[in-house]
Length: 390
Ligand code: PMV
Image (cartoon, rainbow, N blue to C red):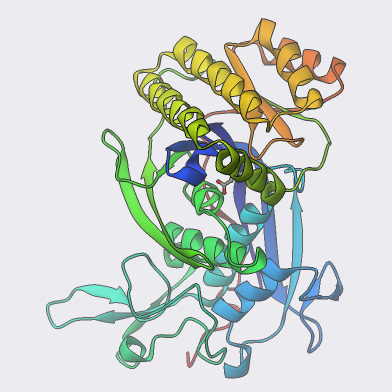
């Protein structure tokens, strides 16, 4: 009995920091992925890489098992293995990719009960989705239930198995919920949605025109409720010869401190909100260019975005050095994510030259194309691993 699922990392093409103030931001799924495999544990303990699962060290996995794996209802403890090539804690969405892949593996391992109405319409008897009001992925609740919805569960008619049971929206909503739980109640849904859906995802606080609206996400935070609208930007036209080269500075800078720095700068000088609005304007221009396949204009928007981010004080000498090194061989380059360290990204038709330049300037380069899959099932052997009352 074994299930393995994987999810991609992400980088932000436009709009980081300004998105915190409601401007649009665009994230792209990258080629680098994380895989999570699960099988029944050899004893009565949850295990990670053979060791006892430490809930404090692995809050994402721990929250997820409470959401999806009703141990008290008889689901056996599991043994988890993780592997992948997304560097950790560098703004590339490794924790969201882990959460989304683990969510997929757990769902596939248990299948999904369905109900059928009198007119033959099928719906879920268990699970989490943007369209279902009577489950809450975000708050803790009775572990015994873990994803069962008694109202519909009592009317279950048949079970679906394997990849058919997997749902991208469910992985995105649970991925966001466990990120929020692990980050003290604060997390934007950008990472979880991009790692789950793949491709290119746009996030804004309003429904934007010219992109497919996926769903709305809401999260209750200590200072009020935040609402985000997520959109699918589709595949960019004619982007086959284009590459993203990500340069990792290796410098660690926590996102929360970077976000606080921007908030403070604006509190001190409220007129600097103009800079946030300018980033929003640049992002919208970049999005329009992406949609018509004008990559020279996409690159220009990235470079302009970087100038604004530097002005806001969220770049750093190491990021500036990598951006400068990448510039001659690329269409545009900027920091990606929270800044202050972490990674930059360059859009290029010559990934070899751009990667070499980044490495020479002291960075670690990763190359990715556009158009990467979101969450997917890699392996299934003897499923379901466990099924309630089956
Ligand atoms: O460093 P990352 O990839 O988690 O990105 C942070 C993006 C910010 O806009 C700076 C913060 C946010 O919550 O959107």
